[in-house]
Image 1 (spheres, rainbow, N blue to C red):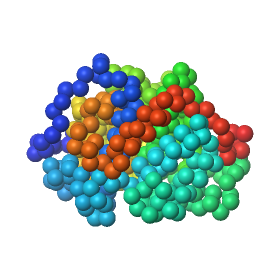
Image 2: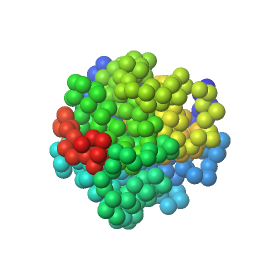
Image 3: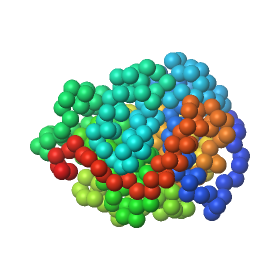
Image 4: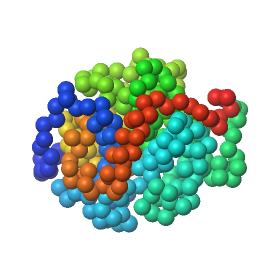
Length: 337
């Protein structure tokens, strides 16, 4: 199934040569694509049907003022990704305590946000951040796991993969991804889906064949990974997923659908938007994956110009890429100690 974009007129007609797209360009586009997707989707995240969005596609492909969002402004997806990026750079690695401090600062004060509060924060995330802020930081290994697997874990993942992109053992990147998910979503399924997305992002940077990119079964870390992958692939008819908003597997399926069914960064992004639902996050996840594959040159110049803090995000991605490896320094989870 594809979305009928017959009335939509793409503004970016550049032919991207994947043979000459640099790793640096792909890593920059992974983070920039996240912010671009988030900003494009934010104005129509709630209260708009797929049909209404599709009818406005030519209008909505331009960042603009709508609802509480000024032109190019993004939501919690990008804010949390930038918090994570800042922490990795500040600590020269992954430090659970520092990451959570940044997230709490965002929630309470609007750090790394256009707003002076944590705009768009999810229920699961808010609960875990409240616990941390109240002094319940150490997570004991006998704590009960959550059955809820929200998509907040994958919407912000790019900085981890960018910072660790030179790791030759992809299992290290998977472990980092799992740890980053666990901070706010203490769910086996959410962790496993985040591992899978980390592998997809890594593959998108290094592979040219899209079918090879989604060949991720060989990177299994166990039963939860296998179970999540069995739900994810093969992709079902996209029309059957509209009642699963916010679910991490659903969000990944939407992003993969846009990536596999369209041949440009822009067309896939608009198609994902036209599906409706939790579009700021489905578009942010698509933007990470497509950005990692196509590179920065494939992102329309208008979007790069208009997204809030776009130049700073590109610079931040460059600094993360320069880390090359990202060690785990401190964890607040007893099972990892």
